[in-house]
Length: 371
Image (cartoon, rainbow, N blue to C red; front, side, top):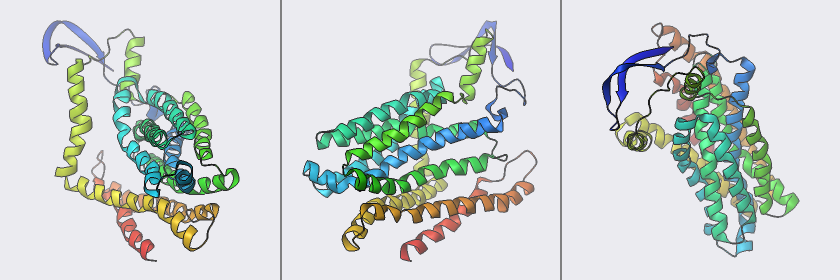
């Protein structure tokens, strides 16, 4: 679908009248447009869902796999446990900064570009971590590897929304994508524990991450672009139509800072629902990440578990994640289905209808901690 108009973008970012008609491609050619990712075949959609989910898995795997080598890192670099644990803390911090890199790349070049560009940089810093000869190099490379790995995780949610309708498979696809980083971080101590027992060298933890990350990155070469903006831009170029006018650099930069950075921070302080969910999620993640350090210490020093046996304790967390996914699927087919039936035709149920799974989970956390 194209649109004609008589407005042009001035240098200051404002629209002005023009005598020359402008034809701009603004939407798909119809609901059945084959170029629309939502109309892809089921197999193609599954592949496009699996790739970002695997990226989320491997990036979060790197968070906890390091925990198995903390004691050897302490001995190798002659540092305290507090400094050695910074390898986990800084990696987690990098995951928070990563989306700031991925957002502008995704807006300018599409989502596939984020996967192709940022992940190999992350892999290089994983290699740097494994080759580190001093504490500073190790910690900096750990931070930068997660910073450049996180954009693939952040953009993954956008890829899912590009290819699935929320009421036709989108809920299940989103659930599987969200489960991936939890499974990755929970599986890390198990993989790391047996890696340390067989290889007896903390550097092998980094090599394992690279061995997992490289094939997943190569899978992204066969992934189609899903960003609507980028796909319409390419189609306009193929048809000889002008792409939608881009704002000047300063206007685009202002938009980036206001919308991408400052607006989420503002919502964090003025929107009660955002504040509540953020506190809840941060507590849940805090408990999970505390296990990465507490399990090896308690089970190893008090109960005499080996690193591999300590990693097996995290299988219980993976089982909990799978049960949570099953709970979501059941509630989606029951309570949410009823809410969708009650909704006005053409309208989606209120977002609060999705909170029942979290409400049940909030009861499970204290029960699990005090059991």
